[in-house]
Length: 207
Ligand code: GAR
Image 1 (cartoon, rainbow, N blue to C red):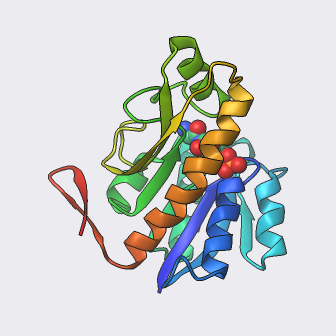
Image 2: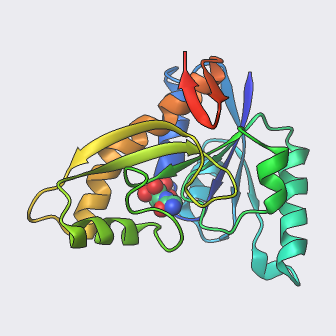
């Protein structure tokens, strides 16, 4: 059984997609052990509670400095003995220790086709604003392993979504979630739980 921790900051619709796919059996051989939020008001915490999943709040604001927060965050992850950490809209600067200690055990969902509209400053609606401003006709979502480079780790899954001429950032965000994110993230977890993913020479391979 793959022990999964999900880190969130907001609404938690991606968390909900994972919960739903565990419950309907689409994701097999994985259990959500904990949901960790940096934001005590995140609706994602409510979703965890409603589904009987441990919920933890850990905010950088409650610590004197970044290092102290990072140490507490690492201790919290370690205490759940997780095999996989899923960043599902987790908008926090990650501890440098995480990349080494949890190498190839942390995945992130990003709402664009990486390497477009990603990296520092591209999160949430800003990603979709960027895509609309550039006038691209296709966008999408990417699940990737996390390393020290923001949105730069090995790409595991991608799915394209069409942009329409009358899209607003909000409408596009919703379509990317429905058509891509809520499909890809559960799929990625299921593939990892089935032992079908490896990282070779910095690239994720599905076999
Ligand atoms: C999602 O669109 C996710 O891809 C994005 O935040 C949203 C969280 O929504 N993540 C990033 O932009 C990371 N760079 P949710 O809380 O409803 O799952």
